[in-house]
Length: 313
Image 1 (cartoon, rainbow, N blue to C red):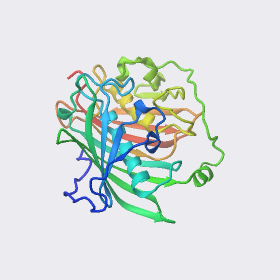
Image 2 (cartoon, rainbow, N blue to C red):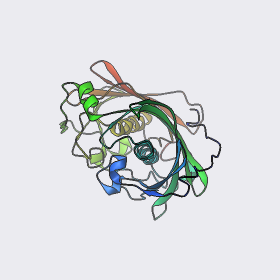
Image 3 (cartoon, rainbow, N blue to C red):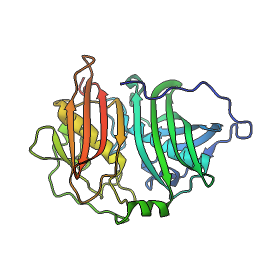
Image 4 (cartoon, rainbow, N blue to C red):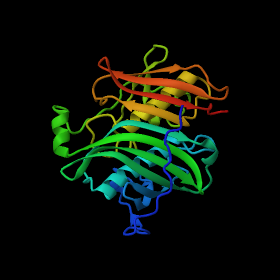
């Protein structure tokens, strides 16, 4: 899997904004619980470049460490929040606008993600490009990330997103209710087999078919659902991909150190979404690579290619 982001050469800060450190409100990263909001402050380095200081908890109940390393999905979530912050604070995208994620790639260099007894401070550089504008606001763009810990490059990423006003979003969503409620009836797969320690975090159920599971959506989950939503969040789909990869890999599962995801359409409430996983030929002896796909109503919802070492390796 290729490196997720090409780093940009050092660019001096804009004279008018140099050293201007801005605090972060949790609404700017689309969170309602402080414990799930990771950016702390931000600085504009250049017109399309930002530095976001973030703190990763060492004891988050959902993004729990994998052994002695931070969960790569925690790092990916910090990247995602830093991008939302940059677009809101740096370009004036109003709060309440919807961010429609089209793709998300990341690479975590595992040697830099050891967990200690205190939270981890990181710097997330956000690079924005290919912005398209309408009525003075961006309507879509690409983003790159470079995450540093203790001065060392620890992760990179790339993504693409669109932005829509609440009015346009509701028109686009048609008859979909503004708030979906989902309480799963099917039993979850065994948490340990899915790479989780808590049953309440399991998002897959058995189907009786090898390599295929049903997406298990519980809108009561405090981290995955923090406010009303009319579709299954992308974070939950990424977690489903990780759990399917662990189930496919067998005992020990995998650490999703690298992932490349494409989101084709929304996963809707009230209709089964089938998650399938296939182990791909190994390119390295100590690495497992899994292709995960989600389908609903015979249509593709998302696809994710995950790669990493076995969790017990």
